[in-house]
Length: 266
Image (cartoon, rainbow, N blue to C red; front, side):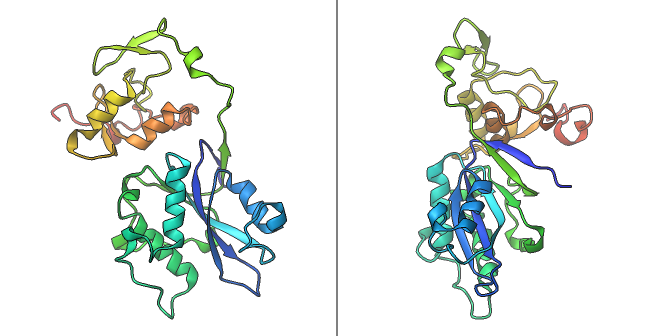
């Protein structure tokens, strides 16, 4: 049985595949904050919130979804470019659909190209296959960047309570010192290492500047300044937002020391 992932602040762009024999093979690309609700809307029709392009043409299956966008604007721009690859200035190098090429395969080819170019290749995205029957391997020369995991199985989006007022919850009376700048940082405002035995606390801006020391415009990866674990910026941000509340999502340094810890001479 597949494990279901629960993700907060979910912004995703999905690919649908039509199972109706009359329209078999048609695809649809869309944006959603709740993939499980969205596929139900598509299959119920336009009157229930589905798109007019998919209405009365179902059933549809959501074969994959790309998530991890920082906000809805970023996700919507990705959606538009995937829908209109030959209008997007970032995809002008991509050849048009070939006569023998299936629409579904063309959509996946466009996606593989999109993940190779900026700004998308710098985002902490996750490629998630939702239907194993339609899973495809990415071409060897177009494998997604190493910081973009390819996952399998269902996902549940979870909204953070709107009633939370962080300005009241975190006060300057409860403070730590930032490990990098040594200035005060409110409890709950700090970013931490994913190493479960590392006690580092930093301002999010201090950590991001440290990760940008290699000349990147957007943080991608870096080493924890305290335990020297290799970390992905996207994972740090997800933990900061509360998405890694499960202790099993953190690194157990005792079992993964050879993977995450650098030598003392580094």
